[in-house]
Image 1 (cartoon, rainbow, N blue to C red):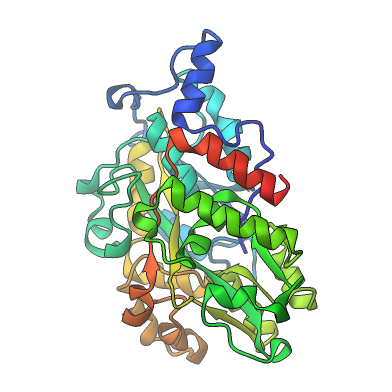
Image 2 (cartoon, rainbow, N blue to C red):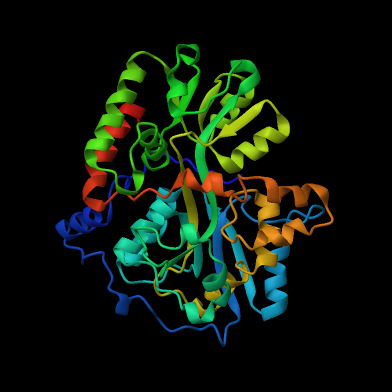
Length: 392
């Protein structure tokens, strides 16, 4: 599964668009922001039928008999004649940002035509002007099939520069048999019987939304006061040693081994955990859960923008989206893929359409929210406080 919780120890962690621009200006470096007219370069798509696509590991379909074979990519190449140079080089959002930012801030190409980053990092690219606007006239599948709930995040209204690759839900995973009761709300995590047996995500962007929702905050328009009230509560729980620790993706190991009984978790991970242990349950709390996405974007000066846009649109064909969803088990950003899977001859594949963690039903969607992103002005102080609590 892709590692979706990340360290904040990277040198550029905590710097939003404004913070980065200010730091660079102080060093005599030209402002980092690139206006729209400065983002495009010569597009070699027609004469060079290739595209460089960078993704997370284990985040695409593979052939059961040949793990090096990626059927949906191969089908794209066969149909279009475009060779896909696919690399699984993204292991951490901040690490990747640090890798490509020197080129982007100096108005140079990165060697990447298409990349997948978490939406909070995509927000940083968009705010810095480092992501090109896509040509939706060349992407009829995106226009027709993109999930309405993901169409217009605050950081990229109208999804002009980004397109979701996969989506997911942040909620609570727990071992119902070992705990001996249900968990229905975030408040249930703070019961005395879970003292020392709860973990939270260490990353600010991964953790704050669910915790605010647990206090009844509307996360689409949360305030700094809401954030600090949440931090006060978490600090108190840390002092009482109610929270065992703050984790990255290793929370799955803690839960599987029984070191913890309940934790913040991602829906896609939960499906995999349940396959090994049916006692593991995943719940979207009564107060709500966060719907997030990891998104495709075309970096500035990409050499094969047209080919990249064609590849994006390929994955919004419901047939292709269904094939990808059946493999990775995250929330599919193409609702029309549900009908494709329902008609599958394979029983397990057909049953995915009834799984609300892959295709959220109406009840689930009413409890999901896309949180407003942390602004550049807020990030430095908010990250400083959260990192002190989480021990980063």
